[in-house]
Amino acid sequence: MSSIWLDAEGKEPGIMRALVFAAHPDDEVIAVGGTIRKLANAGAEIRLVHFSDGAEGYTTLDEKHTIVDLRRQETGQVCAILGIGSYTNLHLQDWNLQVGNSTYHAVIREIRTFKPDIVFTHTRADYHDHMTVHDVVTDGWFHAPLPCAMDLGPVWKYVPLYEFEVRQPISAPSLIVDVSDTFDAKVKAMQCYGSQLEHVGSIFQMMEGRAKERGYLGGGLYGEALLRTTFHPIPVRNVKDLMKA
Image 1 (cartoon, one colour):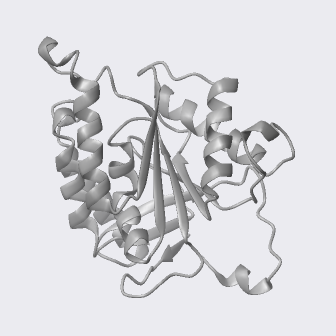
Image 2 (cartoon, rainbow, N blue to C red):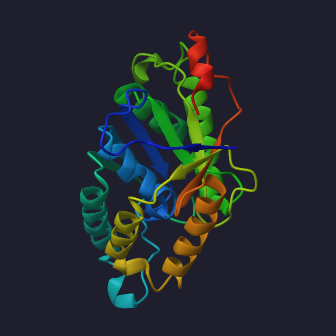
């Protein structure tokens, strides 16, 4: 396990475009809100893709028919705080995300269109919607560089795919990102998801506790854990890349 120290005052030339796939609005903040803000500070272009519109996330019957619009508005506020430049929602059924051609195609299309230098998504060790997104994104990421489904756009290269933690912690992280300077932005972004705070209970206590634990492992005050996928190797043409985190 190693630590990533992205300099918020300077550019990180190795990461210019970051693509984040999350099952529901708020997953991205809980998991990698600090990392997203840090990447944005370093000059990266960030795109966020939600699979579900969060239609089941209402706490009263009065909210049932307005919750989707409300969560979309909340996500807009989050994007502004974290420096996310573009956002889309696939509007798939909440609590019922499925593996299939349509979801695979959506992921492949997003990767080939945005052409990211790094991709983030859920770890598989979580509940079913998060597991499904992990499986779909991993498979879509695998196929995006291959000469198949060419109607989804020109092929894109293999780039690092990192899994993040939401509910269940990653048991053996590959990396710890130091987010000591962006943890406040992470908390502020989570506060924007006010419609969900009753659902997630003492989320801020969990976020701070986990971030402190990860920070301890990485040598900083606050940290976020990532697991680099081993599903497919990343080609290395310059041996100096072996020395990068």
